[in-house]
Length: 209
Image 1 (cartoon, rainbow, N blue to C red):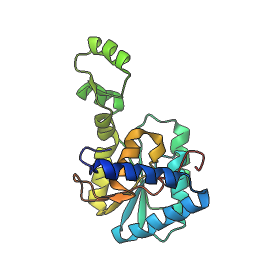
Image 2: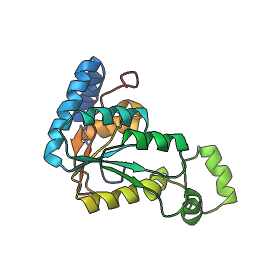
Image 3: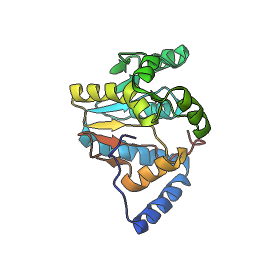
């Protein structure tokens, strides 16, 4: 997540919000779908929208649900050039006939890593080992993602006047994403950007997907 998106809750509110997440995660799938569709309905006030689509299972389920809604949206895929070509073929097939935009970095990931030192995240032991070989090495997965994806996504959002960005994140994927949902809910406005962040399937579990 970009720096500056968090709106911290008090300890009491945080506990209540975490309990709410557990409650939502234990609902039947049919109810979870209904909540997701309600979130998308609320997002209509933030049109035009952009769906960040990776081609993974979470964003594919979300794309299918969005297709069933009456939203003014485009689909954006960040092609870092590192993925399996079959994944890119799948993404393009799924987005055939849709308002689809694909971004590609102006330099290869290897060129970016060499220029900035922002290599992909490494374990502490691996980082220490590689740090000895390259003193410029920086442990910053956020910056790596920013240089290859977010930088180009933001350009598209600004050019197209996007007011809301839809993500396929789930709270169950990590503690960081769970806390993001606890602090901000399904829809929130980050401090850093003019567009809203929308997370319609935050309450889903992997088995639901």
